[in-house]
Image (cartoon, rainbow, N blue to C red):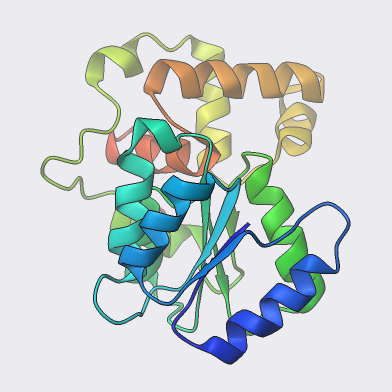
Length: 219
């Protein structure tokens, strides 16, 4: 686990909380985005808890640099910030973040969020509603390069169906219940869709679903 936040006291608080858990530990702390990228390359943590607003290179730029590096493909980024606006959510997801939480999250909520992201699942806070996120993600960014038409066309009917349910925020268990299949089968379809669309994790699968027009924003 790596902590990236310009507030020393907050980092210390998070370190105490995280180090108190048997299944995780902090391997480094960064006060800005540039330092965060360097430390990730040095330590290869499973998860980076990243603030958005930091001096110099911010958390969004750092997230983009980390997620664009093939050597760091196993590192997930959890954005933790007070700026819970839909634009920031969309920018963080486009940059490659796997999750997004507000700094008012409870201790248990933070630890659960870290575990969720480490497992490869998407995490969005309650303040970031799917419909508003969809409004920002539905307009493709030039040069984003996410999900080619050929890749989308290669999805089976079931994989398209499952991808749409993922984009709607459904868990594997919820997808299984809706489609009358087992959770393992649902997860297999999700994994195949991720592989075909080039999504590094579940959160990027949501981004690609909107960016390619496969999923439509709720109005």
